Length: 337
Image (cartoon, rainbow, N blue to C red; front, side):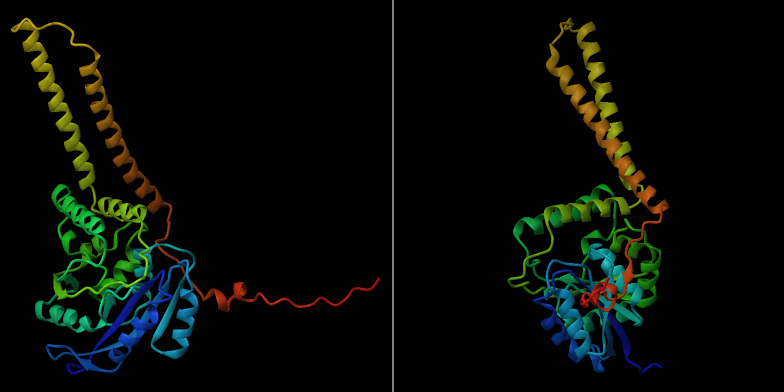
């Protein structure tokens, strides 16, 4: 019906949410009753999927407690730690709303901004809307600079359109999100995979809040892994960059050869200059070769993992409700001879 509210599922990947989930759920709770967006569109959050990604804190106990307190909370249990993007895909696959909103567990995203994302989607006819921060992300200056630099490199060197707007706070049409969750491979970068099938993509302004005293779960290794996965998910553009690199070094070698010949024939400059220039050429040449082989090997690795059927995630039942939760011992009856 035209006047029925837009039904929204919220997906929250949980890794270190022990201290922040209660506050986040308290902010979402008013949205679970029908409300109106700033543009006057009716909406309601019909479910919140908390995807447990096996973090190091007591998030599992908090998820179980919240699920007993609120009937609209649906826990999703993963078999092990898979990472933020696979956990988000698992939540999307388990959702049932007309729209799916993904946001972080740390409280930097204000659930009150969901109405603005929905208004933007309806105003522009977009199936995917990213939050566009109006202030710097509440991280360190080094991490913010690295994030901007990585997105610039992808957009410039690999022509990966849309990387500048990638955010974990996003609204996507439900059927689009569930389709991506069903077909994306284990090595696919979530936002790149969404770009494969999403139609119009828009952004909506939001204000990012401080994470407080919560320590970020991202480390340098994790951020580099995200960047590399984004590179590989961009298709064969990385291989084209390798080809360009090979051509550049080939042209450089040709120019150097012409210079040496001209110097030896016309400038009477045939003396051997020593090993320094030779070693520089060898180092550059072998470095470019090894780099190219490394990039190609990464693509081969992705293909092998995909062909082997490695899943991006695996949903299981609550471990506390299964055999792993039955830890109480019983006394054995005494044996008699």
